[in-house]
Image 1 (tube, rainbow, N blue to C red):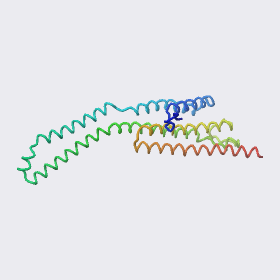
Image 2 (image 1 turned 60 degrees about the horizontal axis):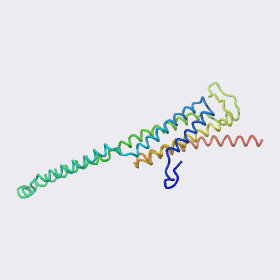
Image 3 (image 1 turned 180 degrees about the vertical axis):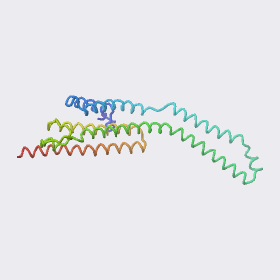
Image 4 (image 1 turned 120 degrees about the vertical axis):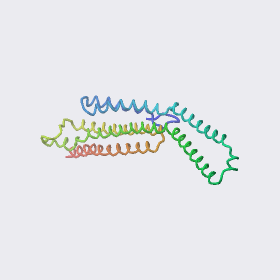
Length: 244
């Protein structure tokens, strides 16, 4: 899922989108009327939208950068103007030390306020991008939990043992092979959600974004491990049944 050559280490959004679209087609073909197929379709749409957003994220906000440049020029110009209109020789010869100290204190405070305003404008672009990215990363967490809900009642021991269900038991119509494929599709979707989240971390070097992406990767990894335990149970029970 990466470009060849010099950028072989960089995730390619186009390849991720294509992989998700292929997965969505596989889920729809195997389980056409299932809830998982609907989730996979939503994930494919979200993947394409994510690729577009990541591409837009790499482009600078020219309006904000122009505003930042204007704020810097105005701030420096105002300081130079104030420094120029003050008769510093007269101030030093006529004013007492207390007045000079108060004047210097006021000047320092104005400088600090001016540079704080400049810093606010300079970091505005990063903060806006961070807010938008964190909102999208929250959607990925929701996707992961929805996928986990779909596989939650898929108990391989019940399917393979054929035990009698209770009136409140969930409906189970899958064969051993279908259950294995269903669970495998869930793990693939979780892994691809982590890849989509990683696309954002590659575009904005922000500690909050990186921490959120790491949390999503840990969440999807933990959920995936739980599902793989079910897949392993299917294999172990199948081997045990063949051995008998």
